[in-house]
Image (cartoon, rainbow, N blue to C red; front, side, top):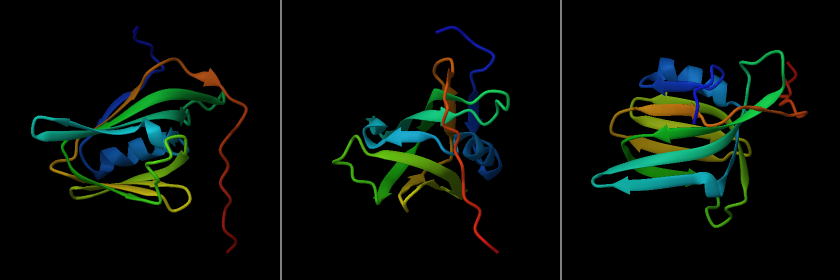
Length: 143
């Protein structure tokens, strides 16, 4: 894999760092089958392969494959995520960190809650972006 200046590689260790990741991952699409929890010796690691909308590229509407990796997972809890349906598509709304609890909030009330020993989260773009004609749009509630 060659390095490209448009590929992101970011590490988050606190809520401030995670706010940047959250903004970059908003409207990313993830299938349930692309969420995996790995066990290596006494440590667990969660990985999510996603199609990330490139919010940082204002001139073009693009998506990019990206990998979100969360280290030192103690426990994973799923709400409104049916792991028996690997083709189910989830849309990321935000990532929230409160001490050692990471919440990945998806549309339709789905939530992946991870208890962590210590926050260490990585986002890596895996390939060059491709054009898309679908731009995420969020309705603003009436006041």
